[in-house]
Length: 467
Ligand SMILES: *Cc1c(COP(=O)(O)O)cnc(C)c1O
Image (cartoon, rainbow, N blue to C red; front, side):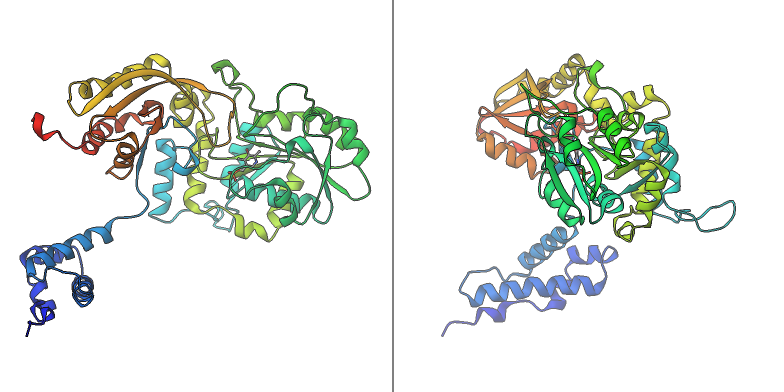
């Protein structure tokens, strides 16, 4: 009769006594270690019972425990080196914060702060107060407030100004901003009814005026952030909408989306409306994202007339939509940088990346490409001109000229090479194009360059025969 293999399994205590596990005693509690050993022993037992051959030696059990402990300590959210060149990559977290904003969030996280407290009087205050100044400064508005993102801003603005009423929007502006953010659906969850006017390409101010009736609550302009209509097109200016709103005593809201504080046209990035444009024209409210062209944390900034801002803050949804202390701290620090425009252009990562010159990009690409050229593991290493999109639903038809390192490994397909980069430590996201892996240094932070080179080398299996 054959021996029962389960009998060979070591006892939990025997595994725990192993020197390699003893060494981990100062990192984990005894309960946690015992649980890990039990988990592995149960796995091995199940494998044996189902007829899978499994190693019951104490050494191999210990190795499996170590591997399990290592896996359990790995977080699912990790740092990724963004080598796609897409600056506002939504899947990679959109804007990278300025160091002062990141530090503000860090300090807010690891201690207490005067989030809703006036230190002068010792009385309760609003968590919105610290960011109002900054919003006023960059938009010229009377007041401002902030919620979780621009989608939440849209909902709360619609409710505050037009609950149960009609909102007039041009057919050319009924956009979808990725995922499930579609203007008609947002309107219905916000409790307003959408009144579409005009056509996809042509909407005139007269179309809005004809649609105005006793139940009109709001005139809204939505910036078609992620697409452009070209050719024979017409759409009213914000000034025309504001004039019409005044004539009929109906509020006007401008959803500018990307939140460009400066005119990007001089650096070759045309077409983004400025956050101050709507306010100067007399719009009642303007809203935009904090983590697109502003270069701050995820937030939905609402600027405009004090009366409407107060109405928004009284909405019970404000409690559900409000920002947490870390994001507020990062946003205040970001807005504070906007006191000095030159500093913003030179230092806020999103704007710095947008402003990066071809010369600078070339130098950085060469620094990565040179050491790789000498290696037999690569079939192809070149620094080449390319173009990239800004992403995040901003500047959709702008192919930004850029420079990339184009690579082909000798023993890996481009898909496998990209996958090994993605699953390495640190993870690297690259682009694949025409059989090559492309690395765009525009979105790689300067301090990540050495890490990027290491990650590339680790992703390539060494050619044993050439060593
Ligand atoms: C991006 C965008 C939104 C959504 O903003 P989030 O901050 O991503 O929620 C809404 N409206 C416009 C016009 C946008 O461009």
